[in-house]
Length: 200
Image (tube, rainbow, N blue to C red; front, side, top):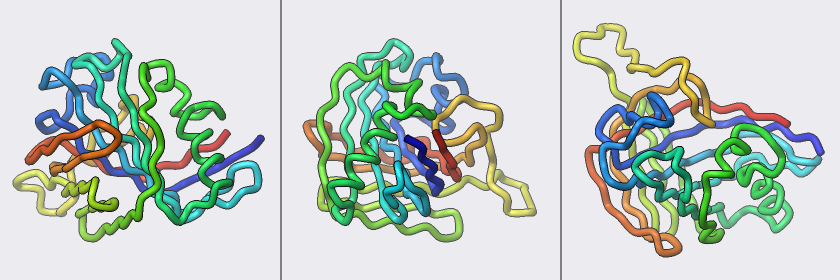
């Protein structure tokens, strides 16, 4: 099976800005648990000849303070426009069964809480990234332009280990979550955005 997808990514987590777990994956989070929402909007791509373009997958994670300790709780939300076939193929990619970046994270998941379909809306403009999913998920982050940077270019982390990209734009935002037993609300916490391109 061959596959290739590319698109746009953004996230919010419970750490202060920037998230130390992203600086180094084995660094401890700022809080006792890491609460993270990872949004992947696939602009274009196919998995085993199944077109999965214009579909969104959201990973909602509750992980220990040191994420490499494993035993994460993970829930997936997929937009309700995905067909059963698209859902199956995307599930294989984001579950790590087909290799790619998510394969390295799969052993850290201790409990898969399930997959929900929801009506998802993603909007991005001028460094603002926003997702709403049913009445259960809201995520919004804004890219951070450092004080005194006249070009208006946002700050970036480079050469990091992250499934989306090794270069991430630093952001700050909020999220409200109520999915498959995972519930939280956080404001003024860490975020990132980046393009992603995966294949296998």
